[in-house]
Length: 214
Image 1: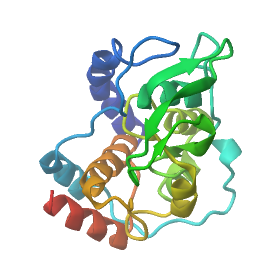
Image 2: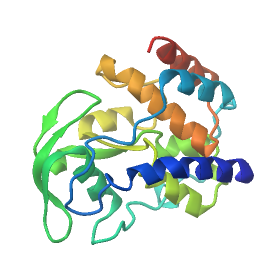
Image 3: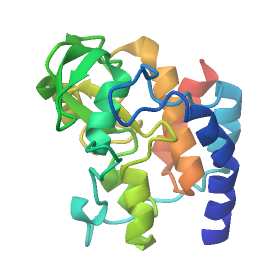
C-alpha cells in the first residue's frame, strides 16, 4: 500500500505544481475554491477501484493523531490559508487571522462575513479516515491528510452544517444544497482514491448513485 500511495502522490505532484500560482499562504490573490476534483467519469473509475470493506472500529482514534492546523509559512496555519482561499476580499491581520471578508458556504449556500461562523471541513472526516485505513498509517501521513491543500479535502463551510455532518460518510449525510452533491461526491472519491482508503458498501452505493446522475 505504501508503494501505491507513493505512486499516487507522485502523479498528483503535477496537479500540485499547477496550483502554486494560485494557492496562498498570506495576503495575495487566490482561487476561491478547493482544487477541482476529477470529472464524474474519472471519479466513477476511481470509485470502482476503491476497495469495498466494512468500516473498522474507532478504537485508539484521536484527532490529535492527525496533527492540524500546521504552520504553512508567513505566520499562517492551514485554517487561515483555506479561509483566505475560499473567501472574497479577505483581510488578514499580522497574525494571519481573517478579520473581514465574505464567504459563501457551498454546502448550504449561506453567506457569512465573520470567520468565526465558518469551520474548515475535512471532506473525508478524520474519524472516517481512521475507520477506512488511516489507523495503520504513520502520523506524518495522517498529518498530510488533515492539512491537504493539494486535493479537495479542505473547504470553508457553515459551522453548524459541518457539525451536523460530523464524521458521516455520503451513505449517511450529503450537503443540504442538492446542486453541490455531484461536486461533493467527486471530491470525496478523489481523496479516498489518492490516499488508498477503503469504503463500505452503503457508502459506495450512495456515491455511485450520485456520480451516475452527474
